[in-house]
Length: 510
Image 1: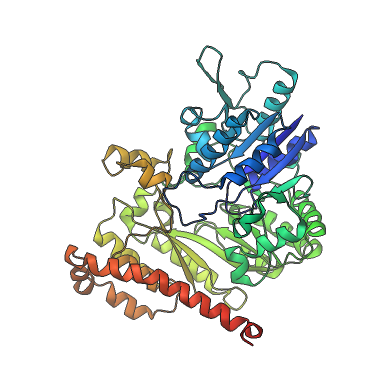
Image 2 (image 1 turned 90 degrees about the horizontal axis):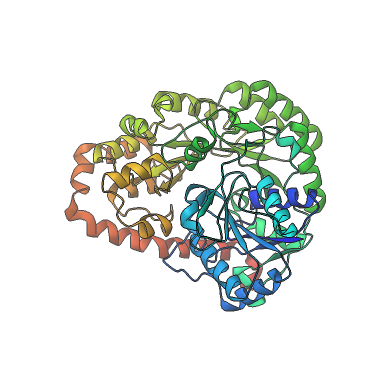
């Protein structure tokens, strides 16, 4: 029994898919991992055909000897999954199961294309499905798996209890054993076997890798999130299982063993990106033990994410001593009214500024922290947005901003509200093909982008966001001006990137 697992994500980390691959191998199944990074990346377009015909032909050949194909996807990658599934079906390929966030939220929609849908965590469900198909037994009553019966009725199976002992699951598969990739930057090569050297080169392209000047390896030390933000799909998935027991942690030994193994396979890794939604939510004593073992067994710089309510001086003491070099924190908005809308009232401005002051105390040990902001919320007024900009003017320097245009993902509370209130009228344009980089071209967003690097003088930013200046410049009559400014910004940024690249390689100029 061989299972092919396909990832359409631009990032080759594909943590969830690699975790399922490792679990299936531990159950005695052969696994073929196929990475098909979306050629559009974050620059989404309404382009249903993502991959060249040659790539789909290569994929059909790789999947021809398999008994099941699994694919993980989020909402923005539905087009990829549709193209891949239809190409395999046209070639007479094996049945296809979709899993991940979007199929979990909208299983019935996905079954219009896929043969099966995996709802929720996928390890045990995928193994049970693969084994049922291999044995020719009934595959319509497997927990977490949805499908259509022969009579067309829907087999809507409940989810099984969450695995609480994450240490019972193997770490993600980075073995390169039967791993394959199509690299959009070398599209002419088609799908080729993936080598460790190729993996390291691809990881080096990552945003944080470029920021730190080191090859980064991404992992997770837990699953779930302690918060229930209205814009986040975590809340929808948590509701599927019930909030109790949703946040789970791997043991320190389990994480360290993974990193020791990966460093033997990928010896040029220069730092580790811990991408848990809220790493700082771990209890203090667990963090201290984690740091003790990190120093003894890993010794690399690392980065992580935190939320304002969980960042403390005691935790940062331990983490910076162990090698924490950079962190990211969700701010989202400086408006009290929008914080309540986002269900983040407990993380108001006072709490966030306190966390920022703690982080700033370690500025000699850390790179400037990144603070996430959400733009273009349909419920914001101009007053809300200016309140956010004035909050940015209070952030202690140095810092960076990561501004994301809101995407109303299915299953979130904000999606349901916006649909009911008439703000969401075209899901394909507003959700499925919208990227977080598609910011509205207006005066307030321009201010936030100008403040992005943390270098704009705080008093100047506050003055530009005062009503006397900002209200006239935000009137509809000014809209063509800001559209023109944003239209010019992208080519200018590309020229600056090219200039920096040219200056960084003096040997190429000879």
